[in-house]
Image (cartoon, rainbow, N blue to C red; front, side, top):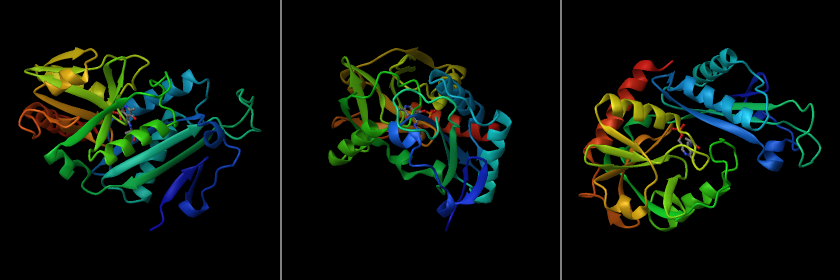
Length: 284
Ligand code: PDD
């Protein structure tokens, strides 16, 4: 069935949606994006995603073509028009179309595109019950991973490396320390302590990460924001990842070494439950 998507102010069937071949998103990956999940027809963590979008745009001297109120309306309208119960809304803003030139063009109108993906039962994924396996790979991305740009080729290569190795995802390693997963933040658990890399330009500042760390502290868990090695992770009690599309997902194996008894740990399971409960209650 054809979806209704949003392109530059209009809601159109996906077959009719068009963006210029001169668009800088296409030519230079000169654009930013957000992924917001939908549970029960409502948006999870919308305010956080909107705030990060502004930050990404600001770092690249780009203007938002829509106000925050409009942004929420467009998200909600697409969810409704496409009958999304569980799934996600993808948003992309690029610098727009202009003659090819490395320097930012003056006066180009930004391109904005939003579309939905339906994922029935998103919160009851079988992967969450089993846990996922990750491999480690070198982090070969650019240096400003705190900006959520659409240059996702290396993360795509990382997913393919994981697949070829019989794993589900890859954790990237730089200077001997884990940065993050290909499309998620990475955590290990030791006793009552959750460890995840500190914020900086080396990782994306996950919206799910911020919520999960707040909820963990509220649940009297200790949180350490610092880097860790693959060896430390392999010796941890548990591990997990977070993202808008996977929420909290247990990790049960790293580079072939099972964690604990090789099944999802109690902290990951509990944090998933808390995150889903609280996020559903606060969804808009
Ligand atoms: N990815 N780190 C990276 C590199 C990511 O691409 C993502 C999100 C995250 C988690 O951020 P958040 O909790 O705000 O979703 C961390 C999205 C889901 C994607 O590219 O599909």
